[in-house]
Length: 124
Image 1 (cartoon, rainbow, N blue to C red):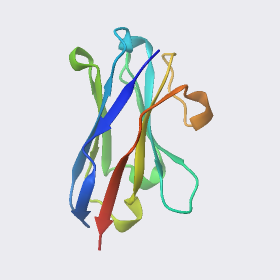
Image 2 (image 1 turned 135 degrees about the vertical axis):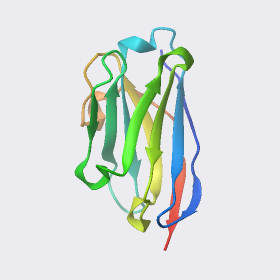
Image 3 (image 1 turned 90 degrees about the vertical axis):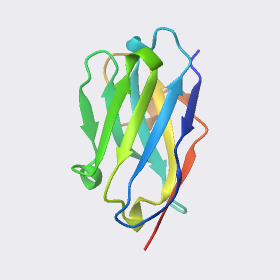
Image 4 (image 1 turned 180 degrees about the vertical axis):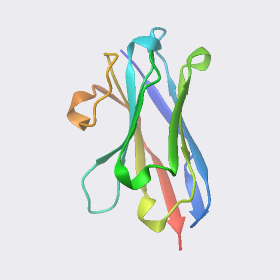
């Protein structure tokens, strides 16, 4: 069982930055692939970024490439999402997710463990 706790959301002006954190409880976190998803009001949840905890391979949705960066700190069992050049369309609840495999997935249904979500609001 893995517990995930997100933090770092908030209100920021367009062009600003935020860093989200996702702390995982599992001692064997290196066996997991981690992902960030987001859900805007009235929209379906969508993939944002993912990382293999063991290899460090990263994946991004096109709309955030060059602006967002996913990384992990193995010693702290924590995954980060650095978000720069934020836009109003990035406003959403951001969720951290984990799956017990080395390989990340862009599909939310492949993730068994989810955090509670953290709100990110970007004002224009």
